[in-house]
Length: 214
Image (cartoon, rainbow, N blue to C red; front, side, top):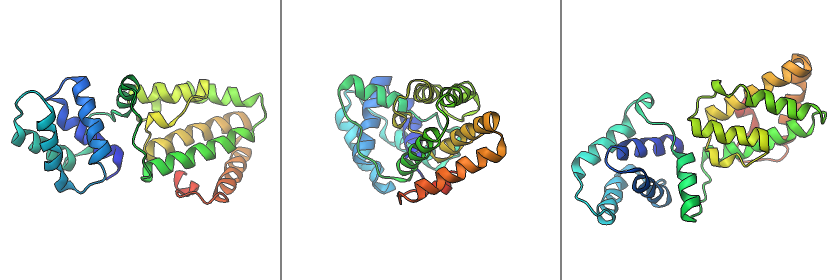
């Protein structure tokens, strides 16, 4: 289970018990101390939750709901709260914990690949491709907050990492850029440009291979 999915599950399990700021504070606690621990650490996390909250918790019920969210279908989970968590951390003056998991590695590779793709384009095509992708984000399987952050990345060259996109979302976004390339360059040249970009990024020997984004 990816970090994104686990975060969604913890968020879903906690959401019915806490107001937003307290909920995000607890989610930040989980991500910084418990996200990389095995499932049985959930009790330890709940112990810390009980110690930090000022009201009485139905701990057994909360535990069952968290386990249910972690083991249930993805369709039952709330959208990834990473954009909300990012905004909360900014307000609190906190930095996000350093992550080197698969999703983070995939995002690093995606940014390298997209940078190569854009850098190899004719200068006048770059803003057109960015606008094309920004105008077609409705098909991206992401929360509204994530889409807004992706739009900022496309239109204002803002950082993409805060959007917290998972592998499938990165594939969708790359496909959107590819469709734009096909629109402006034709499918043959688009294929060539994408293949060349993949080869260039492969030469960087990043932890996440660029071909896994295709």
